[in-house]
Length: 265
Ligand SMILES: [Zn+2]
Image (tube, rainbow, N blue to C red):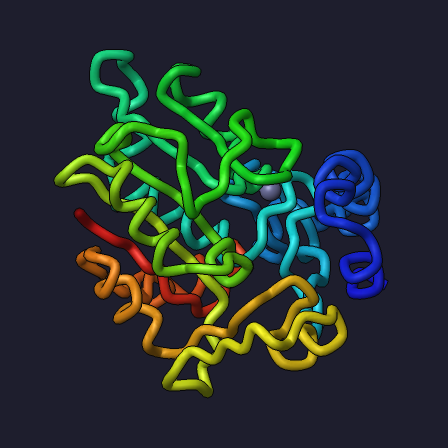
C-alpha cells in the first residue's frame, strides 16, 4: 500500500499530507504499556518517539522498519542525524547567534528541517527547492540565487539523481559554500554498479522506475559517485558511520548501512 501511494501521488502533495496522516498510522506501531522500557522496540533519534518498530517504506522494494511515523525520518536520516549530533559542531554552533553556522538545505526533509528550524536563528537556516512546499526559497540547484561562499554548510540529499546536469548542481553547491565549509550530499547508490548509468532518452515514468528505481529519477549512481563529486571540485569523505555504532544502537535506532558522502571545500 505504501508503495502504491508513493507512486500514485505527486511528492508535494504527499509532503503536505504525510505530516498529518503518518502520526495516526503510528498509533498502530506504538509501544504497548507493558513493553515500555523492556529493551525491545525502536526509538527515533530525531523526534524521540518510541515504537514497536518503524513503518515499512520504499518505491520499488518495501523495506520493513524504515519510516518513523511521527517525524517521517528514514534510516538514512536517523544515521545522518546521529553523525551530525556526535561528530560535528553544527548543532552546538547554533547555541549562540554569534557562532551559529549558516546552513543551506536543498529539498528539505521535514524530519531534519523541523529540528534545524528549532535550533538555528532563522537567518542562519535557508531552505530552497524548485517545488517543495517546505522550502522558503524557490530555486533550481543548477542555478542557485545565492552569493559565492555565503554558507558554512550545505545539505542536499536525494536530489542529484533528479537533476538534468548533476555536475553543474555539484559545482553550484560548492560555489555557495565558503572555503573550509562542508556539505552532506547523499544520493541512492546501486551497490552492484561501478559506474553511474544515465540515459536521457528514457523519460516515461514506468521506464524510469524499471531502470532508475523511481519514476522521476534520471540516473542511477554507482561507486563512481564520489569521483563525480571530486570532478566538481569537492574533497570527499565516504563515511560508513554504521560501523562506528554498537549493535544495540543499530537495532534501537532502526539503522542500515548507508555511506555518508561528506564533502569539503
Ligand atoms: Zn521520528
